[in-house]
Length: 496
Image 1 (spheres, rainbow, N blue to C red):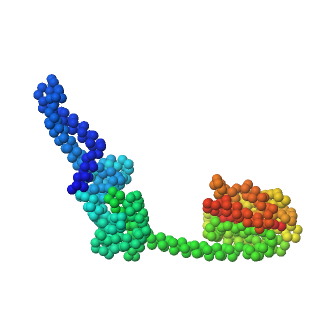
Image 2: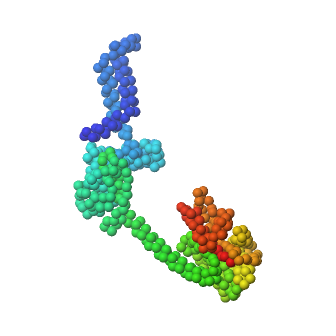
Image 3: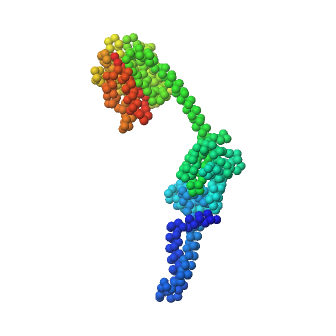
């Protein structure tokens, strides 16, 4: 009874209500007194107004007005804890109905937001004390199929709904320790959650189901509301996805084993190119970049290629490219780089056309290819978009590639060109894809860039080639620190 009166008293003593009530009541009191005085038209004197009459005529309207205000306009504001179980209507839009339970936090009208004005259209029950608020099953939406609890700072259950009792196999939960029934809750400081009105979450597994428990502190009544949500279907779906992801990951790792087996063996490469390095960094496990290194008689053939895409699609393209190069160079003994690129382009286009329309065939690769005659140190270079860097006597020269890919292009009827270079002892040349120079990083989140890449080659060119390799690797790691790798990276350095 007292708590109920306090509730109405809080509604009745709001500043705006009091000011309005005093103004209206005082005005009515004066009017009533003046009307009952004889001859008030000719002489209005405050001495003639009876104090008792004035008080009664003021107090009665004041009380009536306050009662009317409390009864007709209860302050059900979003964010407040409701003391009624009622059906509410938003008086701002008159389109939203909301069933609020005792002890439930009032929400915003989804249409009106901050302009929300709830008013009760039907009241089912009214809490008479905080004790009833704590114990009332209306707090937990009795017919909610999800488990709901209310506990104190010690974890003692003060109220629960039937779904909670079914979950824990206890007919009456009040008085039991929820911390003992659900040990996962012991890691929380319940007192702090109440004081800070914090929100915490925990995942539990009970009776073969997964539940997400949401703990919300309610400082006004010194308790914690715990809302359960059965997420078993979501969790099982998540586990299925994780299993599938693991299977895919294992498949991709196996694909990398196959792809790696198709690349030139490092020991073999060391025999073909005694002074060299290869920086090979796939963005994902498998790569669209690949290198092809071999020797036919006196001719050393070095290829750095960048297939369309990266990851699995790029890896398929790279394996296609390696297979075709094996046929063209190892079986058919073609050693001129421009002729190799022409034939490679023709076969890739024909391979991709199988089962696809002309419009769908857009894949291919960019390539830098050098063929070195170890007898006279002459080199023939051909490139599809990817150029070559030649470092000689601390000077850099760019050997340009043709501006077309090995694949479908507006100029795919134009033959690739070859450039002949006379090499000297201690010359170094570098074949590369665009992954290094296109990597974002640094303090300004910019690409490394071709200018900086050439400067790096120049500055490290006096180091022993294995030390140059290490410095180039460290520079890349330092540049991209904190950023994701954007593409596959391939750089081959060779010293004559």
